[in-house]
Amino acid sequence: MSNIVFITGATSGFGRAAARRFAAAGWSLVLTGRRLERLQALQDELGGQVPVHVAALDVRDAEAVRQAVAALPEGFRQVRALINNAGLALAPQAAQQVELADWHTMIDTNVTGLVNVTHALLPTLIASGAGASIVNLGSVAGQWPYPGSHVYGATKAFVQQFSYNLRCDLLGTGVRVTDIAPGMAETEFTLVRTRGDQAASERLYSGTTPLTAEDIAEQIFYVASLPAHININRLEVMPTRQAWQPFAVDRD
Ligand SMILES: NC(=O)c1ccc[n+]([C@@H]2O[C@H](COP(=O)([O-])OP(=O)(O)OC[C@H]3O[C@@H](n4cnc5c(N)ncnc54)[C@H](OP(=O)(O)O)[C@@H]3O)[C@@H](O)[C@H]2O)c1
Image 1 (cartoon, rainbow, N blue to C red):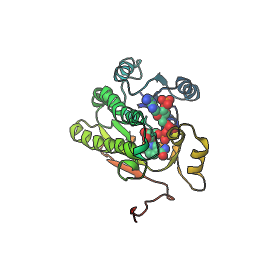
Image 2 (cartoon, rainbow, N blue to C red):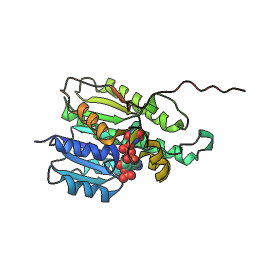
Image 3 (cartoon, rainbow, N blue to C red):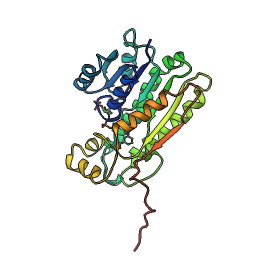
C-alpha cells in the first residue's frame, strides 16, 4: 500500500510542485485548494501515475475542512503526511495604509486555516504513528522583520511557534512536525500579494535567481521521507542571492 499525502494549496506554486514530487515517489495524493479546475488538471496529469483524490476546499471554513476529511474515499484515508501549504500575503504597503480586511484574510488563511486542517487530520496522523509528518509552510518573514510584512510575517511567526508547540504535545506519538521557512521563491505569491500586478511580480524576480517551487517541493519531500526517528524542526532556506540588510535608522 502506498503512502498518502494531503496537500493544501495544491493549485499553484509549492503545493503543485510538491504534488508532482510525491507522485514521482509513488505516493497517493489528496489535493486541495479553491480552484477546482486546476485540481482537476493536476489529477489528469498525475492520475495515470498514482491514485489522486481532489477536493475543492477553502481552508478558512472549519466545517468544510472537517467534512472534506470525513469524506475521504477508501484508499485515501490513512494520511501519512499533511502539507499545510495554503497561504498568502496581501497588502505589501506600510501597515498604516492597509485595509483591515486584508489583515483578517491573512490571519484567517495562514493561521485559522492551518489550524483547521491540522485539527481535522491529527487523529489520522496519530493513528498512522511513527514516520507520519506535518509539514507547515512558514516563511523567513516569521523570523525576520521587513517593511510591509506586518501581519503576514506575524502569521508565519505563529506557524513556527505552533509547529514547535505541536512537537511537545505529539511527543511519543511518532508524528513529526516541521516548519519550512522559505525566502524569496518565484510562484504566484507576488501576483496574489499585488492583486494581479504581473509587472510588479516580474520586477521582483528579475535580474536575480529566486528559489523555484520545485526547490521547496524537494525540501518538503525530504523532511517527510526521512527515516522515522529524524525530525527536522525548522528548515530555513533562502536563495544564495538573498540576504539581510543593516538596521534602518530614522535621521533628521
Ligand atoms: N513564494 C514565496 O516567496 C514564499 C516564501 C515563503 C513562504 N511562502 C508560503 O508558501 C505557501 C505557498 O505559497 P506559494 O509561494 O506556492 O504561493 P501561490 O503560488 O500563490 O500558491 C498559494 C496556494 O495557496 C492556496 N490558497 C490560498 N488561499 C487559500 C484558501 N483560503 N483555501 C485553500 N487554499 C488557499 C492557493 O490555492 P487557491 O487559490 O486555488 O485556493 C494556492 O494553491 C504559502 O503559505 C506562502 O505564505 C511563500
